[in-house]
Length: 242
Image (cartoon, rainbow, N blue to C red; front, top):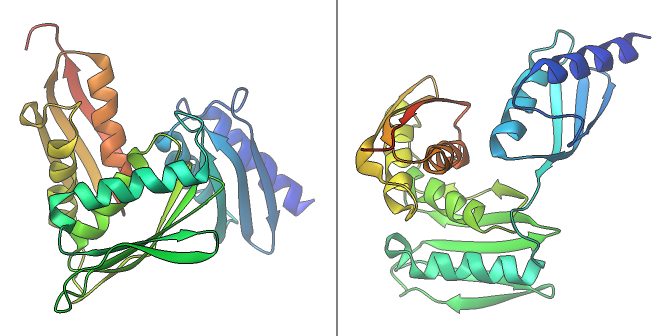
């Protein structure tokens, strides 16, 4: 009965959240021994992260097993998703001295080998639309940028960012702010010069003016895609003439 009560409370909390549509995108909830498991697809990255936050806030939930995926913007096979991500990494100037490898048919293929004195390496694996990034990068900004490039591929349903930062860096709000600004600047569909970014306790706030609602939504998605962002407050105003 206790387990059923926790499940009911989690589902009720998810139902109250306006960014989560359980009728079109149902989420399966299981609970036992303090651990909650969420499974299913969400409409977008915001709904996914908000669902995890809402579920974690329910009393009695000590841990969460995250099996949520987002609905892909485009149906793509794992090979196509992998190729798009690797192409993006190779073309990105920030990774021009990095080794890029991909898992193809259970074997690692080197798409580019860096010069010996460079230690940066990114390994890409895709399974059922879930992207797994491993390897070693030189900064938190590089780790975050690689993750966003993976999220930008329309067939990606989740990104597991296991990249290690060497030498290690202490994460903080300034690092997140810089990363979000960098991502907005690299997004060809967003005018980053019109958007101001701030961050406090890993909660990102976006402000500014954009000409269309679509651009407002894309800017918010970009912020959500950034590793360690817990919440996005979108105060961007849509104005026809900017």
